[in-house]
Length: 62
Image (tube, rainbow, N blue to C red; front, top):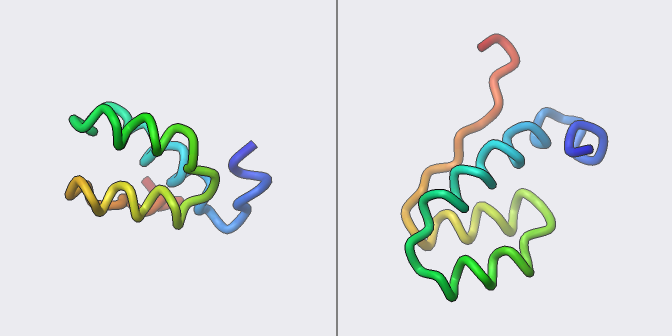
């Protein structure tokens, strides 16, 4: 679905980084808030920045 909605390769990065965020977030209240509010890559990037997780961009030639 992410490949369709965010067709400019942001979709795969969104899904990958979402998993990274969920597995690395140590603040349970912030994680709960993120799970309710994250609907797009930009919102996820802001949550990741709060806990010092760097966004990894999708590279088609990996």
